[in-house]
Amino acid sequence: MDAFESYSRSWIPVVTRMGGQHHGYFLPAEGANNVAYCLFSFSSLADYERYRQEAAIDPECVRLVEEASELKFIVSYERSFLRPLLA
Image (cartoon, rainbow, N blue to C red):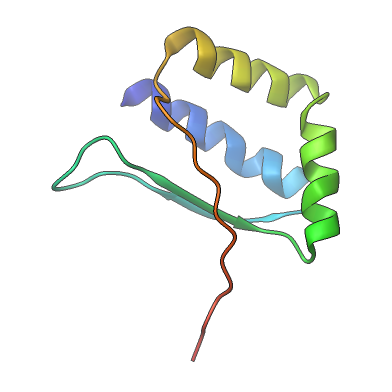
C-alpha cells in the first residue's frame, strides 16, 4: 500500500501539469482492500486523448508506469468515463 500511495501522489501533479484536473485517489479503508479509484477530468475527450499520447512519451509518466510494473502493486486496471451530476 505504501508504494501505491507514493505512486498515486506522484500522478496528481502530473495530470495537472498535462492540463487535467485531478480529483484525488480513493483508497481502501474498510471492506475490500484490493480496489482503489482515481478520478480526474479533462475539458474534452480530445484533451484527454492528447494527455494519453503525451503521457506515453513523457519521462516522468514512463518512469511511474515502469515503477508500477516492476513493483506489481497494480493487479488490474479498468477505465470508465463518467459524467458528474452536481447540485
